[in-house]
Length: 302
Image 1 (cartoon, rainbow, N blue to C red):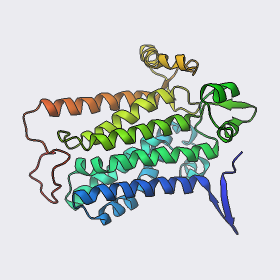
Image 2 (cartoon, helix red, strand yellow):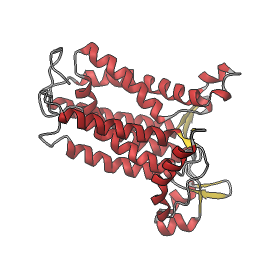
Image 3 (cartoon, rainbow, N blue to C red):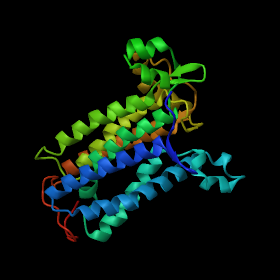
C-alpha cells in the first residue's frame, strides 16, 4: 500500500494529500488564466482569486460538515477548529469558494457569472485530481466489494486494487468514479464554452449539473455520507432514482436515512436547469459566453 507521507524534513511531515490538492489547484488556476487571456482578464485577478478562494473553501467545507454533525461538536467546541482530525465536505467548500468569488468579483468590477464560467473547468480539474488524495489516504471510499469486482469488472491495475484493501476487505473506489466522471465533465465544459450561442453563466451551470449528477449516484455507495432522518417518501424517491446503479454490480444503496449530498445534488440540478430555462425564455438581452468581458460596467444584465 502507498504511504500517505510523501517525505519528512525533521519535524515537518509532508503528506501526499496536500501535494495532490496543491497540484489540482495549480492546474485549475493555469486553465483559468489561459482562458482569461482570451477576454483580456489579467492573470493577477485569478491568482488573487485562488488565494482568497482556497481558505474560504476550507472554512466553508468545515462549517458545512460541523453543521450537519453538530451533536459531535456541541459539547466540545474546540474540536471544531481541529480540522486535521478530519471532517470536511466538498459542497461546503464549493459554497465557501463561490461566496468569496462573488465578493471579490464585485469588488474588481467583473460580472460574477462571467468569472465562474471561466473558472468552471479549473474547478472540475481540481476535483478530478484532488480525489486521488482520498485514494492515498484510503478514505471517502464506498462499501465492500470483492477483489474479483475490482479486477474482473473494473479491470483496475494491481496498485489501485491493493490500495482499496483496507482492513480485511476491499472497497468501492469511489475516488476513481468521481475522478473519471470529472474528466468527462472537463471535456464537456471545454466543448460547451466554444459553442457560439451559449450564454453567460451556462458553462458554470453545466458544471453544477454534471458534477451533481455524478455525485448523486456515487454518493449512494459511500460509507461516510452525512445523513438526516427525513420523510419516508423522500428516502424512497432518492433510492428509486439511484436504483439503476445496482445493475452495474454496485449492490443496493445502504441505510434508510436521507443522504444530504444526494438531496443537495437533486436541488442543484433542478435549480441550474430552471436558471437556464427561465433566462432563455426571457426576452431580455443576455450576454453570451464569447462576448467581451467589460470591467466595472454595472449596467449590463448578467
